[in-house]
Length: 162
Length: 162
Length: 162
Image (cartoon, rainbow over all chains, first blue to last red; front, side, top):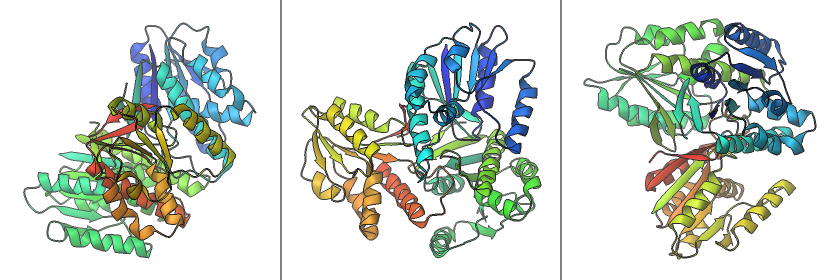
C-alpha cells in the first residue's frame, strides 16, 4: 500500500497521515522526518510532534537521501514531508535528481507520503520560490500516479481523490 | 447545526454560506461581519453585500468579540469571516486568545462560519503573514472539528467534506 | 458540452483537460493558447506541450480575443488557460471587459476551459497581483456557473465538483 496526503500548510495533513499509518501498520512504523528546523517556532513544533510520536514510531531524520533510507525498510514508513525534501534538494544543488528520485521513492511499498500544496496562490516573483513550486507540483503528480490512494486535506479533514 | 465553508479568496464561499444559512433559518438570521474596510474596493464590495443582505439578515459588525456577540443569539448566525477575525486578533495583540476563542465560538449552536484557505501558496517570507497563515489554519481545523458539516468551495461551487 | 478544469499551478489540470477534450472530440479539436512566453523555462515548456499536441490539435495562439476566436468554431476547443487571459486583459487595459467577456466565452458550446486557482495563499501586497486574483476568481465562478461539468485538480488527479 502506498498513499499520498496533499494539502495546504496547516491543513492537518501530517496528523491525518500519521493516524492513517498507525491504523495500517501491524508492527511499529518508521517516521522519516525531512524538515530541518530553521526557526524557534519550527523547533518547538518539531519537539511537540516528536514527543507525540515517540512511542509509536521509529524516527529517522533524513533531509535528502529518502530513497536510500526507506528502500531497506519493510515496515510502514511515513515520509513527512516531500515539500521539505524538494526544498532541501534545491538548496543542495540536486535539482537534476528530484524527478528521478521522486519516481524511485514513490515505488517503494508500504510508504505513506505527505506533501504541501503550494501552487494555489499568486505565483511569487522570487525565482527560487517559483522553482520550488514547480518541482513540488511535479513531485506531487509523480507520487500520486504511483500511489494506491491519494487524499486531499483541508481544515483537518481528508477527501479521497484516488 | 454548525457548518464551515472554507475556500480560496473569490471562491464564492460567502455567497454559498449565505444561501445555506437562509435555507436553514426559520426566522431572520444574523450576519456577523468581522471585516474592517481598508481600501476603496473593499468598501464598495462591503456596500454591495450589505445592500444585498439588508432585508434578509440582521447585520452586526464585530471585528473581535465574536463569542460574546453570538453566544446570546438563538437564531442562525453567519460569521463572515473568521480569517478577518484572526487578522484582527493578531493586530490587536490577542494572539494568545485565538485558539481558545475559536474553540468556544465553534461550539455555539446554529452557527455558520466562513474562512479563507490561505496556506496553499508558497509560504510568505513576511513574519506576520506566516503567523496569520499559521493561526488561520489552526482555526479552520478547530471549527471543522466542532462543525456538523464542512464544505470546501472552489469556483463558486461547494464540495461536502464532512 | 462545456467543462472547466480548475487547480493549482502544476496540479496537472492542462493534461487532464487535454485528455478529456480528446476523449470527447469526434473530429480534430482546437487548442487556444493564451500564454505569451515570458522566460526561457516557459518557452521550453510551451515547446514541449506544442510538440506533444501537434498531431492531435489545431493550435491557435490568441492572448486576448478568445470570444471572437472560438465563436465560429464548431469543433471542440480547449482554452488553456483563462488565467493567462485575465492577466493579458489587465496588462492591456481591458479590465472593464473581463467579466462580460467571460460570460460570453463560457456560453459557447463544445468548449473546455482551464483556469488556475490563485486565491488560496496569503493575499499578496502587490496591487496588480491582488487585482489579478480578484478577476481570476470571478472568472472561475462565471465559467463554472455556465459549465456542465467542473473538475477540481490536485496532484495530477481530478475531482468532479459539478
